[in-house]
Image 1 (cartoon, rainbow, N blue to C red):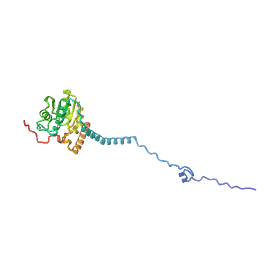
Image 2: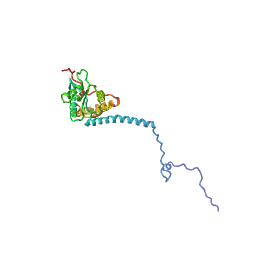
Image 3: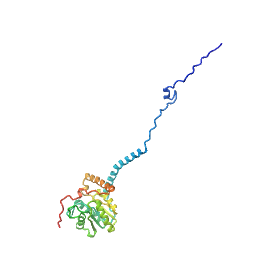
Image 4: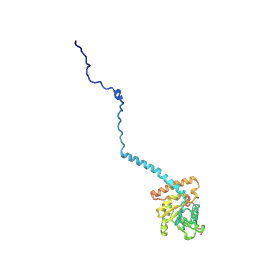
Length: 259
């Protein structure tokens, strides 16, 4: 007896099911589809972005930092023992100090009487048409009204801005063999005037007045802080000094000498 067995026909394998591939095969683990590798940004691009961000940060941060320093310095009262007290100039009217200048002179006189320095230096030239300089007007006031001996008051009648005056003061200090000085000016002017004095060889401190136009209102104070921030940056970056504010320059008709 013969038994016949039928074998299955051999042929090409069935194509794989796409669902099986997606599933990783029946009963297999899922397979992740391949991701295209991200292109790395070039170093030049990164450097460019870094430079731009740094510049923008400097433009914003630098003025804010200087403004804070102006504000902080304005609140200091530095009175170390020094060679002289330096009174920065302000307007005078035919030899009579303006209110701004008189407040500075009174403050300097008070420091002198307390013994913080043995001498006072008055500073400032004159505007066109004036018969008196700011320095000479201040010196006369200290001698006649303040009772300071003539030998203790030195006038430096040079300059219509702080930088020009400080250069002249530095020269006079060297001639007198002085090294240190207490600067008397408006509060917001302290930082810039100290920097200019130090650049001209003076070990400077600042003792500002607490009265006058620059400290009357918050709006006025804000304007002075903004102005002095720009003035400080102008000096540090460009070596230039800004003009005096309107309160400290001549605004009345020309003086006539009264004898």
